[in-house]
Length: 227
Image 1 (cartoon, rainbow, N blue to C red):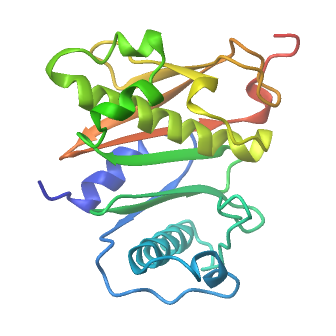
Image 2: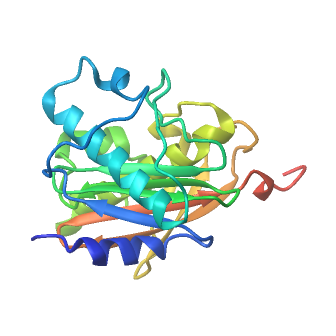
């Protein structure tokens, strides 16, 4: 099922409680030109990776312009995470069918992930999902629900990294998907930067076409003192 990019942008925009700009592009467009300092991140990558990297950066720059900014370079760190220009925060996600970026000037760290809705292979479910999560991925919707849990964790991983500096694993957090909602809750199982074990944060998700999208925004000051 083809994705309507304008619809995706509008629905992902609603994930966040701060002013953001969301731009979705078809990853098969002609390869956009990279800016200074960006090419090194994909110099040895296969052609498909170079393509999605370039389109993702183009989406992020277009999103910056929609918020009145200038198109600026977005290089990558040694951990492959985007290094956002001063005054900007954002997140980039991609599949074979879409590249999408969200940016903001607000003091909020954004995480966004996109996945094919049935993208989770059966043999990966036990790696991504903990015992409590396995109980939510039964029946006909097993792979779809598991993919959504994966997307929620990926979105959280991206949002927390600029705050904690930690590359966390699937076992660091546990996702709760309330029945019939469009929000998820994530609980840190292990102390992670300023987040104590047991701390909970909330994100949002949408099924759009044959994809799932998950997003979350974190503020440093959202961790209560002495929690």
